[in-house]
Amino acid sequence: MKLQLTIFNSKMEVFKTIKSLQQKLSLKGEKITLGLVPTMGALHHGHLSIVKRAKKENDIVVVSIFVNPTQFDKKEDLTNYPRTIEDDLEALQALGCDYVFTPTIDEIYEGDTRSEKFSFQGLDEVMEGLHRQDHFDGVATIVKKLFLITGADKAYFGEKDYQQLLIIKKMVVIESIPITIVPVEIYREKNGLAMSSRNTRLNDDQRHAAPEIYQTLLKSKKLFENSNLARVKSFVKNEFIQNKELELEYFEVADAESLIPATEIIPKKKYRGFIAVYAGEVRLIDNIALN
Ligand code: PAF
Image (cartoon, rainbow, N blue to C red):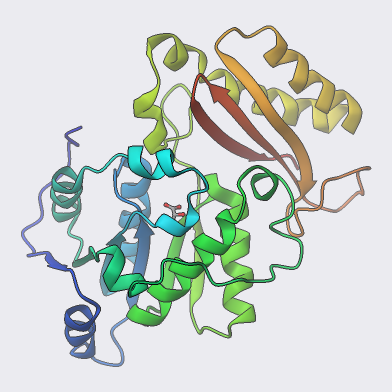
């Protein structure tokens, strides 16, 4: 995928080792702010909107590109994860990204490809945590390493992975890492489908059907305002029973801070709707603020 972007003239530098990146970063003055955008590559416009935001808010931006083995529960997902490094670098250069960090697995894990075990105080025991074993320990392991390697002032994460975002916020508190976590709004295609590297794996029929996910979330939000929890949940379930291309894995209404699934709606609390849907083999997730 070639992305149409304005070309800036600044020279982007790519680092493969921790030492070389840290050497470069040690040259920046104390007052220079550093923004980090962790990615697994296969960059799309959603990622690029995050990099643009980081560029606006920091003097220097580092984007990491690392397909992290410890967050994949299925080996074939890790093997099949799209790798498009040349296009990624071209897109980042065009955006005026300063530094890109592209380490090998050995550079990061030094021969011990295992996750650290964290306690996220329940945040990982619902939704994605129930369906993807040990996934969040793997995410937190690599993100913590990247925070410590770069010493970034701010790190940016998309709200599409809302549960991941809250878990990273929690990890930073537990580990006392002095960094600000900045959430970035979900970037959607014109038809509402949340941008994801997985969208490229959809066939024509699935692509055509997939915007239904966000349309259903929008309708659930309307219903949430005027109805009760049970009706919202059964409405979403029924929408997908009819659908030949999309199979609902879960829809959950949860407290927007604790992620505890709602059993009743308490006025003044903030809730979000979370959804995971299969289009054939491709698993898509999305979420929406309900109030
Ligand atoms: O959201 C992602 O792309 C990954 O989970 C992250 C945060 C880069 C960690 O590997």
